[in-house]
Length: 495
Image 1: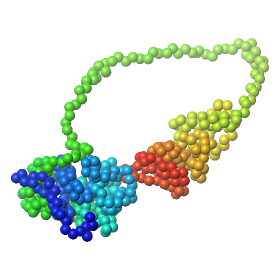
Image 2 (image 1 turned 90 degrees about the vertical axis):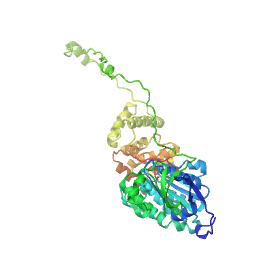
Image 3 (image 1 turned 120 degrees about the horizontal axis):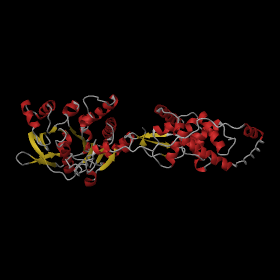
């Protein structure tokens, strides 16, 4: 099919939405809807998502559909109708924007699920996605329904708790969709719980309205205004049953009518809560528990001499005159493998000590020397700088610094200050073994600090040395690539 600007006459398609008060079928003119857009309003539980699902199911195969789904309710359309489901939390902002560009080119029907993202992440993702749809090349301006559920999240009247630049970007993208999207083939279908929370310049661009049950006076007044009803007639909106909407617009009806939305073939992953019986658990007798006798541990006898024993003079003289014992023979020299084994065991013991995490290397070096002497190594040849480097490797779980598998990673770590080697090698170990990226807390433990701010500056410094490439997806999960080694960690929470 040619782009919208090059189309000739298009066959009219009527989408069956349900029945009116008299039992007659109510259709939605799909061609008219593409030109005039749709606004759906209703409190939680009024049936908005059911209405959108009916529209999408009945128009599937007739027009491209793009669904921005903040709660992941519409992902079930994928198996039944062939929609491609994109879990936005698994991708970065540039990747989401590239998806939108390809969607317009290949005319794929998709569900962009924003489930799992915080409000600000959802707004950033939706803004990037909508702007990429809007900015597609002219030759890709094919007609598409762009359905945005919970539109008040993306076009709020006030900033709320999100950053102002995020609110502006999201509001601008929604405004472009509703105001300027028609010439690019984009027909906005937006649904909201609260008209009062939806930006007026976004709501005002719709020419078709389906108003469901609402209770607040301000929302009923705005709904009545949009439907061309008198204020005293607005009370009827409060009495609408679930799944019934007041409809008006060139795509559905030239005067307000009541529509009872028909059935759907698919369902959301989550539904309305239902009462279920409580588990039949036997009540615990608290009184008996409190009355249980306390069994005290037996007292151990404490025996000791009140005064030290008096040593007789002849015994003391005999001890003084006894010849001194012969000196012990020096311990045989250790070979290099034995020395490395003692080093490894000693460093394991130090790293395993939780109290050693925040002690400076100079203090731990003294502990290291004592432990080595107890292991039979009289004079450890390792000096303080060498110990600091070995300690950094040990905190990253690398105790054998002569292992060929780690030679290249250790060489890269050697270009950093000694105290940063541990953090670098901890990430390198996770990347080599394809494990989740270490958290800031784990890196702080390895770096010998309790400040997460220092850890973030540390990662930034290593990035500036081109040893790290950090990627954070929309769910806030961080992955780190070491480009010189070609190793990448799995995504994980940075906190």
